[in-house]
Amino acid sequence: MGYFKDIFVGGLSLIEGMGVTVRRLFQPLVTVQYPRQKIPLSSAYRGHIELKVFEESGTHKCIVCLNCEKTCPSGVIRVQGEKQKEKGPKTLTNYVIDFSKCSLCGLCVEICPTSTLVYSKEYELVGETGADCQIDLMARLATQVEKTREEKKTQEIAA
Image (cartoon, rainbow, N blue to C red; front, side, top):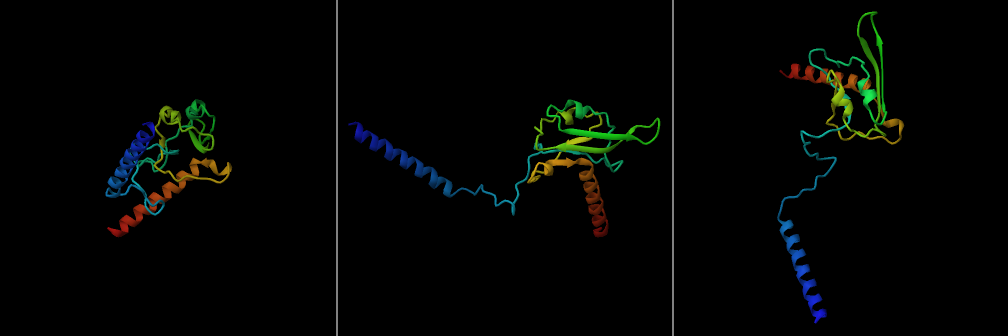
């Protein structure tokens, strides 16, 4: 009796699986042909850390307080700054993060008193070696500012 019961249960299982397959056959596809197609990111997506460009100044507002470097549990942030004037504030000169060891915990973003650090929406940041993962955020900021200026120029020309 157990032999026929096993055959019957196996047949029902097969029919149930085929039913799922047939139902899926008539539903829209969920596969995206990456990199030709990209899905829209959620507003809650937290990518890597980068410096924020403020509209009023056209650059960052980092005061080189070193809170991010001190707070980082992985110890991957290196911040350097220098004083331009004797009594003036420090100016950021170098900001490097080693993303090969970064846990993306976000403590540096939360502790920043000027809200200069933000999460990026970029998800295609890759590197072949460990050196490729050490990213200079000041250099990225410069290219980001230049890109923004070019976009504004093209919008002005189009208008």
